[in-house]
Length: 403
Image (cartoon, rainbow, N blue to C red; front, side, top):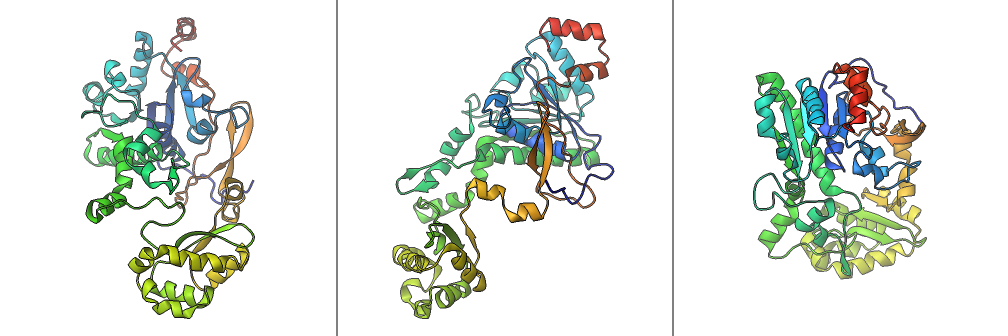
């Protein structure tokens, strides 16, 4: 595997920051993994024995879950039974030395355990508390469970994704990812605020409101246009031509026309039909959308005359953005990832190392932290010893199934 061009040098940006996370699934682990990438110490609290249920989503990565491997590198795993008094006492010890607490427990669970933001603010006033929920901690849906696809449905995203034959979920956990990104940026903002004002502000993010923000453009279009954008596969709902077409060798190539200059270049240099530039059916972007079927037929006919490599070469020459429609295997072999050193090996439970994508944000002079994915409870005894627990104490906690 190629080495990342800039290995970690000196202190990483979040070195010295301690994050304790009672987390599961995707959204919260995605947020905290990014904090770990920047050098934060992330202590992941898991259920004794089974751990985070995302560990069992699949077993495809040398027996480990692809989700868990993606989301949990560079963390320390501590098992605690938070329903027990002893488990909560250990957590309280941890929080006394932490900067950030993150939780995405089921609705109402944090409050029942005394781990909601208001309760923690009274006990730990310098602690930044981040709550990730499904639909918010107040309002009529505060008590509803929410998973990624449910939220995709509730925000209307599924109604936009797919084709004329039916809707489809997005291929990645987009609501979880959106919430995790907003939690991550919210925590960074809260750390900055605390550093500059001394005030620790709580952070709250819901999956629904995170994805609702990402739905703003189709929401504006629908509210003010009287109908929602159509569901048309790889075509763009409001720009034409902008979509994938099949070349003579069977591979799809997607291209995009963004302005009249590119439209003219497409007609003259790719379609070889300069008269279309002034054709009233296609004179403006709105005209091209209105006559999409006629335009698609013209473009598809041209695509049938060339293989995908030639199509992309001609489009490149005309200054028109384009890309082959890759499958995941083609993505894994992408020359940009290889040439820019975006793969780095990371250890997983069982002693295996797997290629892992380097975080997408490069900070000059500071490469990311890329430590191993922990086994369930791998760091429990070390963390307890650090908190002052004796070997006998630890043995007792294990015997009582607290850890």
